[in-house]
Length: 252
Image 1 (cartoon, rainbow, N blue to C red):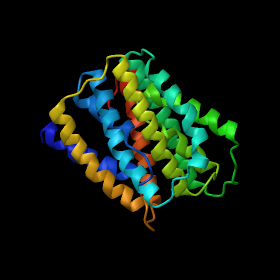
Image 2: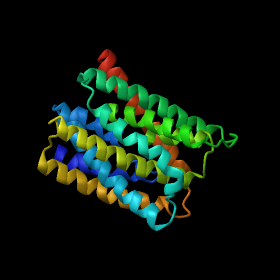
Image 3: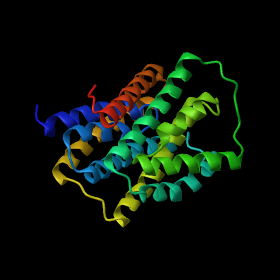
């Protein structure tokens, strides 16, 4: 099957899985495109565009259903945007970039899996300064790794039982949107933003449809636990694959 047909179909399912739990899918877009495309900056540019497409849909859905809460979320968002921009300005080799991304994804997936296996966590509140510190740190690593960062933030908040799952998913969606836009601006300012127009349109259509369906499911009385578990396993596989491929040259 040709890449022009295979990738949009594959990205449709990735967007469906990820958007159902408030994510954009940027990590998996990066990993999969690295198999088929050779231009490092093109891979990052397209992944950010697709991320923005998916989480914009999710954000609008959460706002419409009044799940989004600016009073709770602004401390996470305010410091993350400039630090995400700063992260995009770091010049990394392709190997270093994918090793960092792979390591962060493995840690993130481990946190997600622990949450599903062990559910009896004591609720924990985060004060304004703690939320700002956490948001800023994750924003920087989001910019560094070329994705929105919600996949790093959400497992931490879920493990701490900070708020209910839908509230955390809505924060993750908005967090990814803000940081992806900041990352895109960073690529533009560094003159490293580039993409294939025809391929990007096809991929955008695929994630747009998947994002609409996934966001719809996440805002209904639909048990997303199974989808969340599958997402955690997918993230783990993607992270391990990047580490093995770029660290040891082994394909899995």
